Length: 224
Image (cartoon, helix red, strand yellow):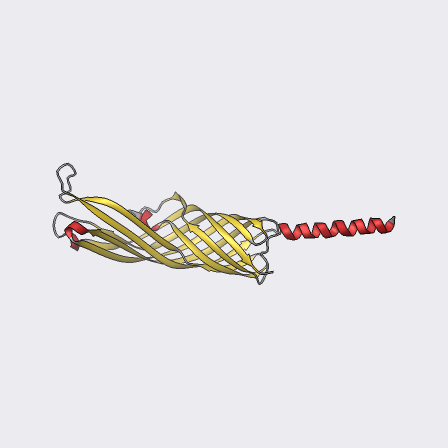
């Protein structure tokens, strides 16, 4: 009878350990993380900058390394591309002006190193982190009927504090939701068109601002 009880206990402990290994996320030292994050997906506070939404939303593929259990150090590469069409009225009076179709293309790419601390050992893992971003930005504007083709380049830097939750569907695959707040500064490209010499009016201006947002992501952990 005792032998049967001992076998039962051993089987139960083995099954429990196996179940634990299935539910625990593999945020262990030496593992690697591959991720795809969004940036500023849902803006809660906008920067007070003209048309800043051209450069707000991005996707950011990246990778990280667990320097210690639950401690992730990594880098993302934010990429943004926005295309819009609009209308330019040559004399500034909508009712009497000649209308021209405009095309605006905003591009950006950058680099974002970060450090992030997870907490706990279960599927749902809260975390805190900090990151720094540097982005190159380019705004192209053209009115083909007027032979107006303008191109302006600028840059942005940003410090960000963030917190969130990652839910691991498996020990290696997780869905991420994040709340972040960033302090931004840089140059913003712009174009204005008085009624003469349209192609000469463009430039950039410096700005500082803050932006809070909710973001989503997908994470895959490679390793033991």
